[in-house]
Amino acid sequence: MAVRDLDDYPWDAVAPYAARAKEHPGGIVDLSIGSPVDPTPAVVADALRAATDAHAYPQTVGTPALREAIVDWYARRRGVAGLSVDEVLPTVGSKELVALLPLLIGVGPGDIVVHPRAAYPTYAVGAKLVGAVPVASDDPAAWPGGTKLVWLNTPGNPDGRVLDAAELRAAVARARELGAVIASDECYAELGWDGPWADEPVPSILDPQVTGGDRRGILSVYSLSKQSNLAGYRAAFLAGDGALVADILTARKHLGLMLPGPVQAAMVAALGDDAHVAAQRERYRARRDVLRPALERAGFRIDHSEGGLYLWATEGRDAWETMGALAERGILAGPGHFYGEHFPQHVRFSLTATDERIAEAARRLGA
Image (tube, rainbow, N blue to C red; front, side, top):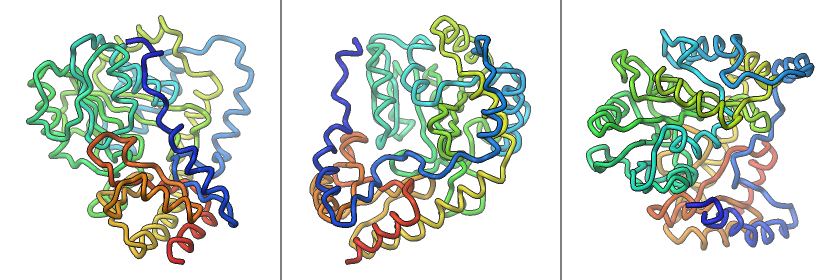
């Protein structure tokens, strides 16, 4: 499959609803895209400025300081001790890695790539680019023979579902039965809200409770876009099976997929500072505490959403009808149709709007 054969970019279909929402006298409240609106932390911006003399090519493998920072972060924040610097690798944001991982690990025509039923579209795009078959399934027992790559997403986008250690263990065991690589997209892991995740860290697929100390065939993917407001920096990384990481590194060297030097320096600062992450988490918690009850009072049911950056909601009718009704109130969301065929009545509300816009959305929902 060629790039030109991909479907139209789905967000183009939202344009008419955005136009209608913008006609509202109070302006649009855009809750459709998870793009951070809060400032980049000063500690990160200062590190970027200090590293602007970047006259040499950056290292694809990452600077020694960055690799050590990633290792230290996994031990401190994710409960994953014992990683070596050869088991981590920076990436140019996480979306390019999601799209390219099938190519980088040798998935090919006719192979199967499993991804969640409610899923960010790029998992399927990456499969299609190499001629593989994307299969949406949350049940490891149903994953078919011929599966070469399994994607998990916890907390999930769009549904905020969090997988506990037992669920992750079952997924890893099934992937190994199939001889498949299993990759967990964990970009929202600092944002746990409900149930045990209100007080406990969201588990990583690399947690010893999951792996038993054996990381073969396992990758964890993480991004600083959400926890550190670095979406514009394209700052992400992966960790896990050292042999897989080495193969991915070789391919990335050939393709020139290297993270700019100043961004690598900024990532070191971001990974070493937990205070700004805690502050950002509280901003999102406060916005969630305003928006969720407003949606429920307006007749929406919130499903999952125990973690992550979104509220996954339905009022029991087709998502495009809901989108139209919201647009009349000047509110824009993301239709469930974009996240697979299984959730045509859901919409996704992002928490990445200012406090004022979230409060305005709540007011309009209650009007």
